[in-house]
Image (cartoon, rainbow, N blue to C red; front, side):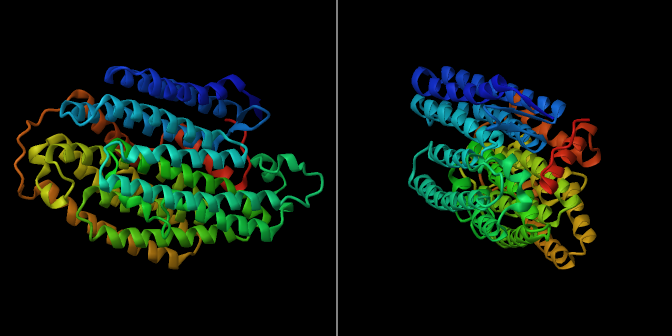
Length: 503
């Protein structure tokens, strides 16, 4: 069932965009910039949650001649995005307040951050609510341009280098995605009764997928996986990711890893049912994704072992976890459900880990793991948060990431994909050993750096640690009914392209 909600979806895009403009032009103090940011993200989040709820009630909602469209898949990703943005925005207030106190965060930087932060919320929302695949591509390109300048809020030679590397590599990737989008539209040229003016509408391509040109849609998917996979951090297109994550301020790193990578992967998810239907459900697209997923796990595992910078370690951990999600998608069946569950779990855990790394970096003046030994003695809250989040990222039970990885393992067994299963187990085993060797000294190692600042944290900071950790523990032991329903409906769209009727 398709319901039109033009006002809701239009306001969802307009509110954060207006906030971005106001922040850039009218903010006259740090407090004003913070207020505008809170209003833009808060208003956009409320509208986004309302859109997700309406999509749950009606199956799908749309606006502007179905150019804006929300179904179970976009609603789930919209909810994950909102969770990451709310947590990261709250943490940004904590993080930059400390920077401002140290004289390292000016009004000009605050205005720049507020405008780009709200603007990136708008562009990522546009990606998720676009039924037009061309507009979805525009949204991804906009995220590249807006988030690039967030990397160098604190200008330095290394941050500028990371920004340009991000811009160049991701722009090339997005150009590949543009070619893939055009080829996908061209694959419908000879379909009888197909309106060429609607060739980029996802719903139209889905309805006529079985009649699309198989050769063109295969070529399109290769370009799309390379293009959007570059932005998602899939190996071997991941080269920009470690530098950008390590040089960006901690709230930006949390946003990058917590959701921006998911937004690019979401674009690939949209094409899976179309490509599979056009190629006779032979598993062609799934095989390609599974292969790239296993390769990303292996690359992430290999580099994690040798990292001595905590933020670069977390960046390569993102490469590994994006690979796990891609593997789950490629295995099909319960693997798709597990992959979507893993996106939520990874977003929660990786946001927390970057929060902890950022606050410890402020206290220690470095992100060198060797100098962070015994971090829990100098900062009980954030040292413990980093240690526990690393355990969760390794896949230690009973955290939710263990459960989603276990479901992917089961999907591999169900599909008799024993080679992929063996490679997956080898990769996560190397990651487990490599990260544990870094995590243990953080908890029990001897500190070699004296930290003069007292270990004082606010209730807000404690909430930023306790809430996501509690959620990860709860989801590892119990799947709420509403979440299970949302994941099932979203995974059915990836598997078949069809939205199930609301329950």
